[in-house]
Image (cartoon, rainbow, N blue to C red; front, side, top):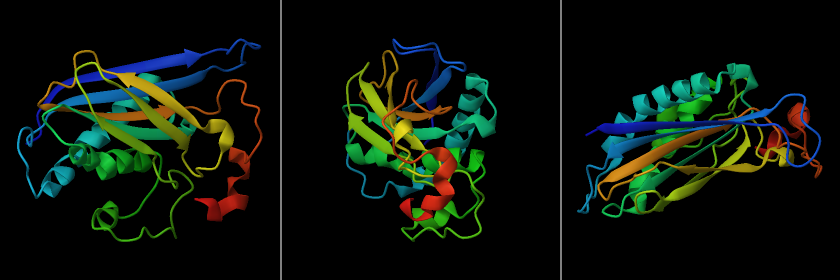
Length: 213
């Protein structure tokens, strides 16, 4: 059921946005895996088995993305995920990525918990977890033609209300998805937008705002 055709990785270093050059550039990375959609062209009522099969795909992609960005796990500050479904599929096929993609990055960053509880629709237990990967991974998805772009939302890994780290990563895999394919995407960055200066909660103050996750 899992057949990967291509893996596309994009990394950028942002030094300035028309203002002073940053002492340390912002590193942003995205990875997209192009998979055959086993449900293309038909309606399948039970698609959940594929979600479990995607777990190792998500884990491998998360590690490959971190390696491509050439930064340590401790430097990852924001994350997001998304999916582009080919025209012979349906939007719900992209939703299969919520657990495999999101929890792969959270576990990479140190979160420990039961992803299967979330998969089963149970509330996530927040006690006893380490201090990384605590916030929900923002997500978006769409049905599109080959070359379709997707703006993948990005927020802080521990608190979604860190305003200076709100961002989006435009991802496009040339020639994908074909009608019978899906592109599953992960994205991460190392911190604040260059020249962020609109106030709000800072990452260093997250512990004071625990309830905002």
